[in-house]
Image 1 (cartoon, rainbow, N blue to C red):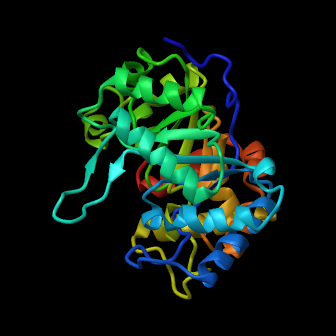
Image 2 (spheres, rainbow, N blue to C red; image 1 turned 90 degrees about the vertical axis):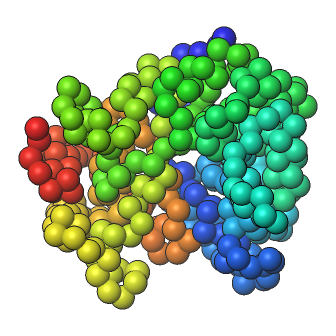
Image 3 (tube, helix red, strand yellow; image 1 turned 180 degrees about the horizontal axis):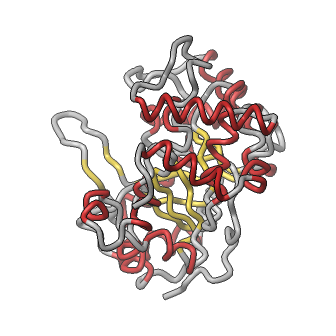
Length: 328
């Protein structure tokens, strides 16, 4: 077993661009020049605010997200050497009467990575993430697949997604390479990851449904915590991109107003404050920015700066406003 005590992602806490929205409609079988142009604009906007890691999954828009990204890579000499790519495998979508299911068998991992590399038009992934825990997972099979892919130079590092500390440890025991990242849904709106910290020994802690100790395990073992859904699906954007208020509950309305106030005080955007709240946490969380709108991507630019300047009182005020209740 190898643990990641000095891995390449230690002390991360950087923005990541999530490519889930690229490639057009999930139900469309193909893409065109408009989708490629959209991808190019999003990539340019992300790079414009210093993002270098781009997050994919083989299922995003049924493979089209990887394909349009690959088109941009092919048309932009030198771009691949300036960025990092990660993609995920392990989810099989429902098709032809076969239900959606998870598959982290040896052959499935190798096959899916090869397919992703072909779509992305690259020879390697900087990081491969295992997308969801598979109840039928055999750690030795995963270790065999990952070992082969690394030996062939197709994968340079391994991470996971949606896994608890116990699941990571179970897998890590069979691996010769450290798990370097764990991607979880984490935001001011989906805050069970931090609620579990203060709800120990309370019934609400069990109701939160987040495996307590996972964040601490990742910190102790140098595993980068990547937060998907970090912008809370736009519910705090106050209609900045939809033309109408996105908030729908009193807590969301109050949180959106508070974010706007803090943004004005700090001379930045609500998006930067929202992401800064995540990045303020000692885990050095790396938010995944999933918007395909260049203007919203650009609005995230000050997140790390906001995190560095955010006070403890501001951090707790945002949390208590979003949770709609005082600390226990």
